[in-house]
Length: 338
Image (cartoon, rainbow, N blue to C red; front, side, top):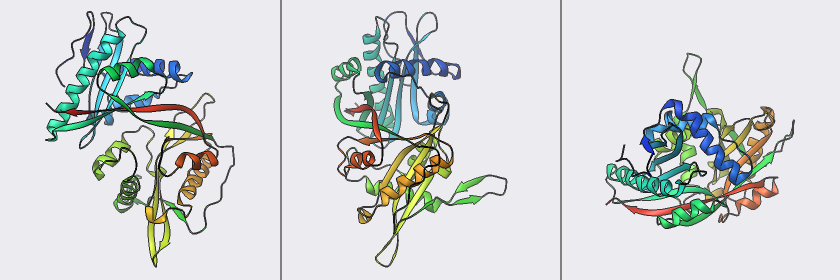
């Protein structure tokens, strides 16, 4: 772990322990309740990131007070070459919230620089997601050299029981294929996973914040999600120049049960090959995930979209019944390793 931060008096920093997960969920829930009007921290997702498979690519610590109460959580995620994603949650009710935030932002700089040096890089791009109305965090980030880079619409669509949407003529959608390992378990076919990665890499090449992520980084990162399921990965094909073109891909996950006790589905990624745009590939993939959610008895499908998407994706989602529930912002900073 990077050198410990210089904290306000009475606070101590240490590595995360498994028994901290409930306290971390409480911190996250406080922020969500304050900014979005409803607490909904995903305990299993936090567990996966803090002490599970997701912790393998992160440098993290928690801050506690004299009574052992967790007061802060900071995480630097080695997302890909030249890219470090940050997480920072605090107990905002305390008088020392501001100096604690600035101290942890200093530590996150050190942690991100160490990650970049380990990759033999001279700099890295820091990014942290902040709720659009979180003025305190925005002020702390501004003082620390970050700038607002993008807005993201977090959207949700209800799925009525028994709903079934038609596909699109000329577009075939299927799940990624799997191997039977002979012991009751299955694993996806590498060729199909590589096709998903290739489509998403190419389709987002002209979008904001596009960067190269290796196949192994891509697969490991998505498997970190506690809602990950291999049977929630989809490929779409169309005829193209006398052959079959892998034209689109969609990766979805399971969302935890909402207030009604019913799980949802979440579209983590959807991409369409530029050569197939305008042929209804995205609509076919979205219809597939909606129908799949209905068949599984789920009540909603969520997603996140760039508010300034060059493809006008937010308009497509709105036309299919999605509505914005809250807005987040990307705040970024270029950090030299020295």
